[in-house]
Image (cartoon, rainbow, N blue to C red):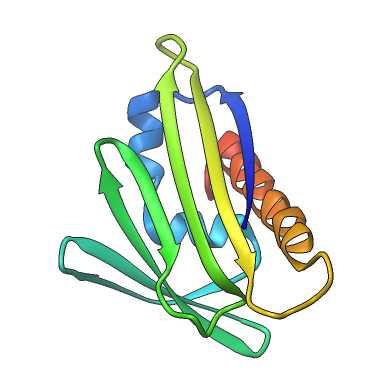
Length: 136
């Protein structure tokens, strides 16, 4: 399993950011999958995302102010994927956003976890870019 972390200070207050960070918005902002459905159950939000030739459920939970999400089934691109999104106010108008993800590729490829981490880092950078530009 490989872990990647990206972080950026954005010109958005922590309160405004909190209001914008919805599970479906996060999935769309990462840029690899489209959101099919969103369902709240058992204290979590399940987002079913789809991409070329696959559908996968992602389970989102709030863990003491950290947005935690994981691939809920083993039918996705990863055998395991966990992500933690945290943010803290720098001042009244700026927020530091840090996203950390651990991934293990489902396919038995040489350097597969390294490739998965590289891809995941790109998705997390897309997310931070979208956060900075307003999560439209």
